[in-house]
Amino acid sequence: MADSASHVPSKLLQLPKELRNIIYSHFDNVDAKSLRSTCSAMGRDVPLRLTRVFLSANSLNINVFRAVANHEEFRHSVTEIIWDDARLFTQPDLEGDWSGSFYTWPEPDNPATCPLWFIRRSMDTWHSDPRFSLGWQESWDLYTSLIQDQEQIIASNLDIDTFKYGLERFPSLKRVTITPSAHGIDHRPLFKTPMIRAFPAGFEYPRPTAWPPAPGKALPWIGEDGPSGPYEREYGVRSNAEAYRNRWRGYRAVTRALAESEQHYVTELVVGGRERPGFSHLSLDIFTGYLEEENWISYKSGLLHDALAKAKDLKHICLRTTTDISDGEPGLLEPDELEQVDLSLSTIFPIDQWPQLEHFGLSGFILDIDDLIGVVAALPASLRCVELSHLAFKRTDDLYENFLVKMRDTLSHSPRLEQQRPKIRIFATAWGLDQRDQKARFVEVDDAVYSFMYQHEEKLFIGWDSTIIPGRGGIIRGFFDSELMEPL
Image 1 (cartoon, rainbow, N blue to C red):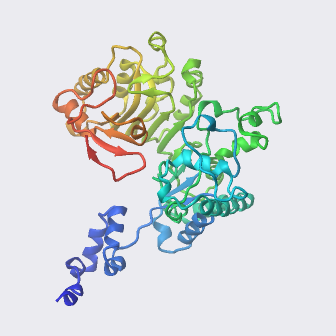
Image 2: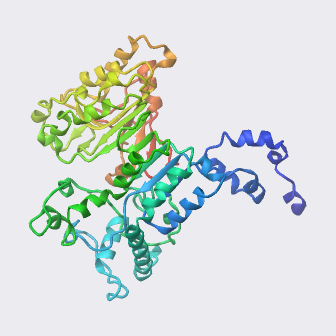
Image 3: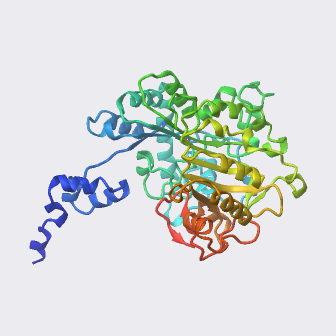
């Protein structure tokens, strides 16, 4: 009986092929992959949809990228290229101070071949359980082969040439994402690239970080080389201005290729880029260092405002900064200094130049509540979502709760129809999470905020900060785990 039952086709497979394809078209990639893995029949029947490809200075990533680009069916479905702009460390540099670490460093299996800096960086990065480690010598052997491969690709510019080839071969390409965070944290990658998927279980390696990880590591784009220059002092004797600029190698290559090529249809560049007609989506992650101690001089220059004003077709704008804000409080300003902040959002955002804007996002800003409310109220009728996180308000008596009340009062008097009311997305802090979990998790309170805004539900936040009250509809999500959804 069991044998005969195993050969009975799924009822889904008994439907007409046209109907099955319509059903499959409503699945996202995660569901489609799960269905394909249930049995060989489903694996053959459910179409494989490749909507994005990955690229970096790695042969496996490049080979998979080119295989998709050369496939006459798959290449037409690709809408996004994700460039991993973080490269593997090839030598110890001056970043980090190991002397104060709480770890007891193990001796390498073979000190002659496995260097101590490799072990130190790997352990500081991943916090791995040694019981499940591949072993330092095996990890180092694999790592050296990856480094050799990386250096050969960079020397030949094969990754850059491959990106240009993709611009020609992907007719549906709309978005290019550049990120230094593909490898994620604690063995939880942000993107499971072919390279990362191929790593054996227990493989230990230093997590690559291409872009400066701390304010003190950000140096002038153009400066003096040599022992007296800032590059050798900060990054070691082999560093110079060009080597520093090449920490953004992928970013430089992508923006140059997009600006020079006339054979593509890219309208979305996540991270940053140059103006392009029809440019509709811009997500900027800005390393601001200690800008609050310099009275926001970069914002007040007007250069960012003028650049954004050129993108008149924008539908999505999200600006995130590294300003130190935790639980609604800035880390570098005292209360009396906070009240002196005179930065207006109109200095940065040319709201009147974006008549089609649908999404407005802010993260890492110190604001006046009335200024923020005024900007939101001035956004066009096309607005569908306001996304806010890691904000601090300049007046100490201004609370997140006050902001939502004022926002509710402002929007309730607007001429928008109920179905046109924008969704307010706020990413909050989870009550009770330890410091490590807070770096990897956040609380999504979309539904709770909607209920508060438009249905006058009870308060959401604890005291003055951005900590959400448990049981008010918050959902714990993960920065590096898209499937994590836990009620708070």
